[in-house]
Image (cartoon, rainbow, N blue to C red):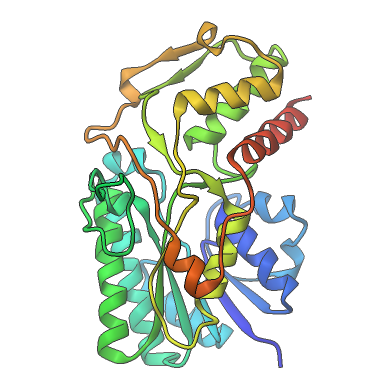
Length: 324
């Protein structure tokens, strides 16, 4: 009998790569998707898997539609990737962010507890929960205290602790993956990595003149989303549920990203076309995120395979193809 997986947020970057992985392992994959006017499945189309997904329309903030999704899919595994995930926008829509990223997780946990108590659940936590708190070696791990610096981070802390509470109170198999920044050619253009690779491709082809960015000194631990979804799956294959940091353990600045992306496109001196716009700087900035995923290496056997340079080259090449 095939395993059945329900993936919320399946049309996003992570949901798409995860769906591809699950299909390769012969899962029956259900995607929980918000119903929108002119709904598109561009990311699933990009990987050529749209027709292999059973779509269930619903709303992560609506308990009835979540229960319908659980009853329809009868999942062995649930991966909750649904979120308002752009940190900058969470300052403009803090209430919506709290409802989707915080309360939505509570609704899902209640539905699983009531209607699918044997299902294993993965909750997408985030490095943004740490904010500007880190250990002496400038890294964050599973024991580092959370100190969120955005409505997004705060909502995710609520979701994380609620997931742990349901695991401990109701014996649910629920895991939290504290993923550090992970990117790909299908990352949304609102995220700085894709914003940069897309703009550089257009500048190279003469379709754009300038690129406006905020804090060029911010440092992030960037990995490839395709590697990170494997860690999600591995968490739910363990005998006992647990929480794991997933990261590369290396950091790069926005300037480093600009250097690599410009080089890949054959452009010299990115400072000629990059302009700093202070309107893009967050009200409470997070200057540095760097994860320690030693626990995942030891218990899951997981390590990132894709280097930063390979990731950026992959993204730039795909954006050049899109605009040529």
